[in-house]
Every structure is written in C-alpha cells, then in structure tokens.
Image 1 (cartoon, one colour):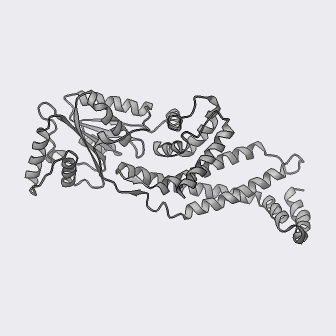
Image 2 (cartoon, helix red, strand yellow):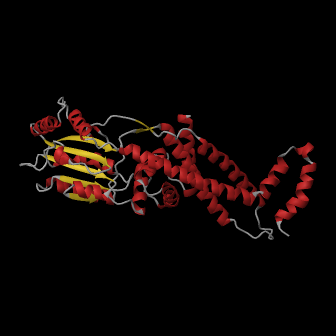
Image 3 (cartoon, rainbow, N blue to C red):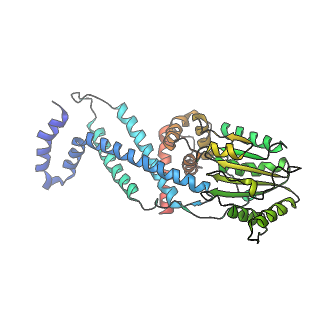
Length: 385
C-alpha cells in the first residue's frame, strides 16, 4: 500500500486526536505530505503564469527604454522577485529529480517531501502577491532625450553580435557614398545601448555633433525637426513647412563639426527627403542612423542596413558574468547558467539580475552562489520596501 493511504487512514486520525496536546503542528505536517503532488503541481502552474507575466513586463520595459523613459525602481524590484521565483523552481526541480523513489520503499525521504510541499505552498503565496501587485501597471516615467555624448554606458559589454554591428556602422560612417544607415534588431536586443557606445567612439573618425531623437509611435516631422533643433541648441520658429525645412538645413550646414542624427525606434517609414536634414550633399557632412525593429522600415529608409541578432547562449553568459563581475571560475558555471536561462534571451533582463548580484559574489560553490543570489534579492527588497 502507498504511503498516502497509510497517512490518510492511520496516522492522520491519530494526529487529529492529539490536537489538544500538540496543537495543529502534527496534523499540518501530515497535510503537507498528503498534498505533496497537488502543491507541487499548483506551484508549477502558478510559476508558469508568473513567467508569462514577467515576459510581458520585460517587453514593456524594453519598449520604455527604447523611448528613453526611466524605469521605475518598483518595477525592477518586481522583476528581481519574479526571476528569483523562477530560479527557486529550477532548484526545486533539481532536488526532486535527485530524490525520486517508489512509494513502497523505506528509502523514501518523507521529511524531504514535507519540506518541499510546504515550500511550494509558501512560493504560491509569494507568486499570488506578485501577480496581484499594482507596481507593474506602469513601468516607467517619461524623461527628456539627451545628446548621446552625455550618456554613460557603464554596462556595455563587447559581445560578438554588438561588436560586429558596431564595427560595421563605424566603417559605413567613413564611407562617403553612404548617407543613411539602418540598424535593425528585435526589441531589447541592445540597439539603444549600441548607439550610446557609438557616440563614445565616433569622434575617433571625425568630430561630430550628435542628436538622438526617440521617434517611437510619433513620426511627425515637425516634432522631429524641433527635437533636433533643441538637442543642437537652436530653435525653428517658422510655421510654414518650407521655411522650417530651409531653416533646419541652413543651421545644420553652418555647424563647424559634422552632424550625426540618430532616429531611434522608428515604427514606420519617414520621408526624410522633405525633413530638411541635408544628407547626401557635397562633403557628406550630415549622416543619419535609423534604428528599428522592422527590417522593411530600415530597408526603405537607408542606403545600408546593419542587423543585430539576438544573443546566443555564450554571449548571454558572458554578459551576465561581466555585469555581475563573476570571477573566471568553473565553480560558477552551473548557477550562472540557471540564472541566465531564467532571464531569457534579451540583454535587459540579464542586466537587471546581474546588476543586483554585482559585488555580492566571492569564491563560492554553485549552491552557495544561489544562496548569495537569494540574499542579494532580499537586500534589494529591504532597500526599496
């Protein structure tokens, strides 16, 4: 007979009669044993629902960052908690796999089952709290665009995909025949970070005045013209469209440095021929870079398109290790891979988790590393609660 039957028909009735003497503790522990399978299945189901919600939040975070908006601290904390649940689930599944045994053997670890069942129940409560949280209804605060030269890139990591794209863009900027460069890649792959790094390196080619305009859903030419003028410290006061185009072209031609204009996160084709941006003129003093998630937009607007691919497994692991400042040791490989897998393929999620772990790690084993991760998240929770 199975242990579930023994517990239900023999042990539980005895435990229930000892309530007055021992309280509810014995009966509760037996209940966790009886509900072992149900609690684990419920935890797996709720963890899957949380993962879907996390992916939705990450998508909105990526879009907000593409729009140059500041991500709320409460949202980053929520993501850290959600990813911690995923890591806990991975570790729990590993423990279950290692401790499997048939119900009719005496080798079955009942205490282990009770502990896991209770832990699953606790995690379900935490998941319910995260799913009900109002902190993720809005992920960001609006901020103004800034000149790319003022932006810091402390977490830029020269990965294979981004380094290849950056080198291609730098070469194209030197090419007098290329006026408009397209940069295409999926949301969250690091297009904006790449543009920030480009701004740091472009002066090695020639001195440039740089203007970064977040286009997103608003492709209105008047707004784009005004933003370029604002970033390059002048105004377009005319109302007539032809006069506005003439003023913008005149002011850009008059600059002592070459001009680089980055139109970021373009969702649909913009007719730059009527914008007033004087690209393609003699001397090629004005270059334009268009970034977009859509290949067709880049192809229609640019002379050449550079594509950024999603990170491969090695690049994801490298990104995590460098941002978290992990020592170069095989002892960290197992736990690091678990964490990176939970983060998915986009750099933004990896950067959030690695940033939380930065400076927290010493020469520890894989199991200790996960404990340090848990401690780091708890520290973040205390800091922002």
